[in-house]
Length: 261
Length: 129
Image (cartoon, rainbow over all chains, first blue to last red):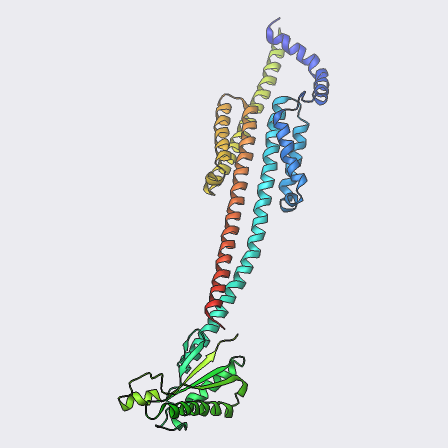
């Protein structure tokens, strides 16, 4: 009998009979030991089970990790167990990473909205600032620590007199309008004179000048409670009293629109 | 004698069928799996996983090479296992990379928000009203 003849003979006879036996043996045996890989896979999966955020944020990957661990638990021999456990551990790690990613992305969405709101607020603030600056420019005022300081342009006085001249009324109108827009801001009116006359006379004159402006504001509907007047006499010139032009500049009224408290 | 020849032919046919179907099918499936794994690794590399998950990427690469060597030696089961492991390594590299990127983005928006808030406060201090 040749070798092949012998094999064929037995194959024909017993192969079919043997198959079920082989399957039964394979079905009953399981890996004899718990490998370190399987322990690691169980630990990795336990992390998913203990943290509901992971399964909530990576449901598919978490489910797949569970399936993979089950396969590893059912491995029939050590090498298969090690291989399947490796896959299971990795799948659990993937679920964790996916969950972290999704949570971060959700946070990003919320933060983007917050950022957009903040930027909008800044733009609104800037627009408001621009508007106010335009209004200040209109008044020819300057932002100082106390508030907006300005010298009423075109409000000139004759020497020794406190009467407002018609040329300055437009500037008073603008100031009144500004004060109406910001009803919670008070206004300080400071009168000054040139050096002609006695100190006492000029002190009274400067007070009268500031009161002339106050009366003009009262006429324009600004309440008296918001207005404070003060005369400084001739002590604070802004130009030389030696020339007529300088003296005219010194005969003036300065305004401070006070900051809100 | 006629009977004898018949047996030999039967046996050869049987082995031949088993052999070819086993090898050809397996080889083709493995080639496909190998190409897929390679694609996964390349995609992970392109996504900057070499920065956030260098070890996983290296493991995936090494296992892909080992799977190629195993295929050459016709150790198909070993090759398949190696490819499966290389795939989950590459998948993890991608997942870690995605997580790192999302967290970076979140952190940068957070610090931007902080800057915005600070500049707002500064503005409010500068303008008294």
